[in-house]
Length: 446
Image (cartoon, rainbow, N blue to C red; front, side, top):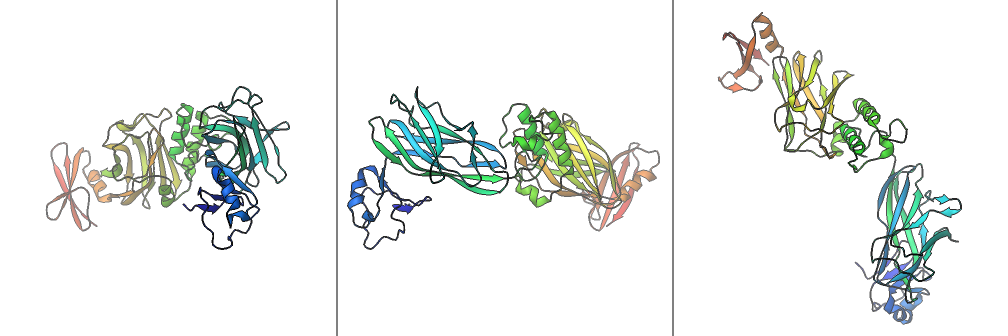
């Protein structure tokens, strides 16, 4: 860090106790701007060649004000805490608040909404009024010279209304801060500022991920169950606009998830991929099983199926691993099917391996499975890679030829006689074994 720098409010700060040597005219263009230097070095700077161009030299001590960065949404009302870390015992302060354009410090009647924290002494007061340069000047003191408690922590609060439009980053500044010690010494504090990020929320996007997914359902359920989810945007979860969050909002968010349009890259930006926890698919005759291998527990899932032309899916059901969850299946048209599994009481999927979901499909081609979201009971989202499931009409025809015989199991072999999990490119032999011990063999050519 350099020893001196130009600040954000036309001021210069030099941290060196001994003024650095300046061999030519300083490059600073505004010598009427305040120059902040260590308290014990004020006279040195006022009399040192080059630095004596500044007409307003202010000494700062080891007392610092700070404001945390914040994220908020259009139209929100936010409470901004201002922190003081102080070495000296402080009995009073004043500071100028410069709000970003469009932001408003709210009032109750004619009084600005500023309030002291529990660091105040018995009779500390705080007040605010407009300053001539557009700032809002805040003043706090104790008529009986009580000091603020402790040496760090939040000191006072500003209640601010965020504008109804305008995404972006905004800067709130705290300038011209002066503190008074119990010995009546006046000490300047360095200017402070924060960054306020403002953007528009989307109804249903409770976790501000940019997409509406089953994770938003989980976060809303966690809010209802008093788990204090973070992030959680109340207004985005209040779907019916009644200023409260109930199970009705959960149901309405589920409908938004089923209808939401998004692409795979967008979903992955809003979640974490996993190599450890993944889904895969198996097919036995006409029954398709979606399996889950997981190292951590999940309370909800979401996936999209893309069916090949002419193929239909039916009889969706959760296995015993997930029968505590509710299942919703939405046919979105054009072979697109969205599947949600979740529970309002955050029960988790049982076990760490095996089938999670089954359904029936008849036809030939590849079923694509993507848009997978797995959500923990803490509201964290994992997004495993998608996969495909190969269906073959020839396998179904074996069942039909068997008449009244019941199929026990089906095995696949390549031409080398090696057993394979599913039909491969080229010639695959399909051996169907029936419950009476008889077998049939068919060829599949792909």
